[in-house]
Length: 148
Image (cartoon, rainbow, N blue to C red):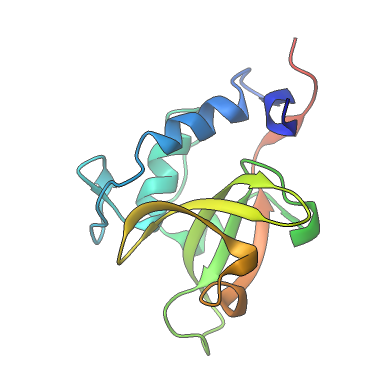
């Protein structure tokens, strides 16, 4: 029984249901400005998935990154969002967003829409691409509590 099965959104829906929903889009192609199952960009994907669970998110990863509360990378849980610089590693602004699907001391699995591979799950902790681009992790409007 993973931690996420005990996580309930404030609207009563469960984080693991949201993650299961997100996983149904694995393999969906990347599309610039895409916000639908025919093709997603990173923020379009996160917005679409979370939109199905009562969240109304702004359109850009930069704006989404202004929401919620910051959590330490060591404390991320399923459903938290990870924010990264875009392709320019020297940039200081948010250009990419991913959702944590699994987290333990060895791995942080995240689902996101990659420009080259579409919707994929990968381990942040072993990613030579994402580690140097990591900016922050955020937790949006949900709480950890035992489901009833």
